Length: 311
Picture 1 (tube, rainbow, N blue to C red):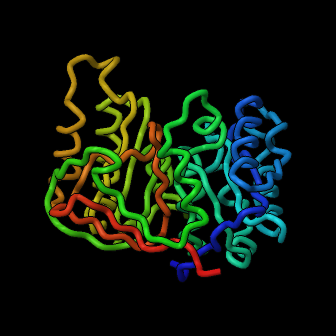
Picture 2: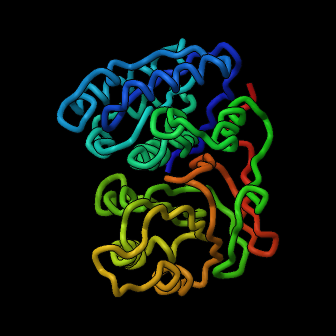
């Protein structure tokens, strides 16, 4: 894995590029996101992907990959924010110019389908990126939780980050203490990368996962695959984040999510805490992918070191 590179903190007046690396966004929500960023003191540069449509994709794979290359290479742009997820990030991972990304480190932000890019970018370049709320599907909503808004203040702050029960109730599923770089994101996207050049490396890392709209048996299938691939065993600890709308639907006679977690994760003996509000939820708290962190079940905390370079 490449040496870790940290992006510079954003400053008032910086330009943020808004792009759609996967699906195309709701136009009205994208405009609300622009208004929010402007009020926060940032300039906005929209990518052409926001106006392109190719089926469920925001343009061709080549167009979306080239747009990311251009935004990373653009000296005016200091941050690159994904407007929405959907589907399509994995299609452009082989087309990204990782050398340009490595040589032009800057804030890269998004979650859900963008998970595939967080993992591929960090593992290919070492750049710390941010698994955080989308500008359209989160910030563009009628009602946004104050803590979701607060994420964006962190982009200009030099302080470390601590996740405690002041944010949400947390539960220890397996005691212990783990240290390592944070890696993870959406469970479906993580599993889809197994067997590819972008397969997640959890060795010596703190592994966080979230999911939405999957039944317990589907979560079971994916966690079983991760377990058999050694990804649970290799990690130093697991953060179970939000599993939105993941109750039984088609299969009424079902294991509970907690039973599934016990079978595949808690049984590993690694320290495990559940309840982190990260992912398809409100509030949606940003995690820096690749930043050093400590998970401590005694204190019920995750402490994350400063994810930015000193500017």
